[in-house]
Every structure is written in structure tokens, then in C-alpha cells.
Length: 184
Image (cartoon, helix red, strand yellow):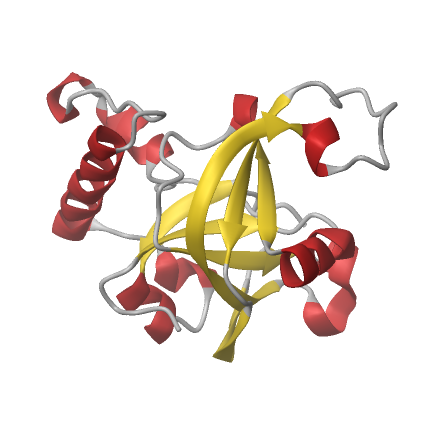
């Protein structure tokens, strides 16, 4: 289960098939071109949009999974049954995950918002009732950024700019803060 000290990336399962792939094959994919700056996190939390999961399961986070590792590959290597897909030869992160773990209570999206990825902490995830509760604010934001920088510096595939070089808007966007929306 997610620990309070974990660095967590909240991501989206755009289709039920993505949940099945995570559950059965133990991985989640992110297009490299649209990936967040740092994928070396401790756990993933999966948002299930209403558009794919319906009113009963959609509009909430029900599952998390520990991150076991990641690699860069192509979509075709991940989804061999889609050789004609327009992005078949594009690079994707394949994030290897452990078993899906159901949260003790769902984290609901009370308002319609759109997002692709954002970071939070295990402590916030375990205490959250809504997606708004996951947003990292104030001094905790700086601590989260430092943790992300440390991960980027120890991972050869990831590079983070120095904190002082980032304008506040870029830092907010990188951390998934400020105005954010959920794909639904």
C-alpha cells in the first residue's frame, strides 16, 4: 500500500483496457512526447474518467500501484495488436507496476476538470476525499519539487532544470498546480 512518504503521480486510465493491461500485465504507458518531466515516482494513482468507466466507477480514483521501474520503448512493442496505429512507432514510457491496490475509499472528482498527470504525496493520497485534496500547496510544494529534482538527478533518463531557473507558472504547471482540469 502507498506510504505517507511516497511520491505519487496521479494519471488517467483513458479506457477500461488500460486498467486491464495494468492489472494483467503490470504496466502503464505514457507517450514520451506528453510525459511529465519525472516518472521516477514511488506509486501511481489511477483516475477513471466517467466517459470510459460510467457513472458507477468513473469520476474517481479507486486504485494505486507501486512503481517497480520504467523503460523507454515504442507503442508497437507495448501493443503488438495495433501495428497500424498512427503512433505505433512513437516512443512511450513503459512503467512497470506491482499489483493494483484498491484504496480504502474512493477519491472523487466533485467538479469536472481536465488533467493528464500531476504529482502528490502519499500522505495527501491516503487522506483525500476529493481530487482537490491531492493538490500540493505552499511550502509543501517546494518540498515536493525538491523530491522530484532529486529523482531526476539520480535517474539518467530524466533531467530537471535548477529550481531558480523556473518561472512560477512553469513550476505550477510541472507540479500540476493552479488551474487544472480532469479528462472526463
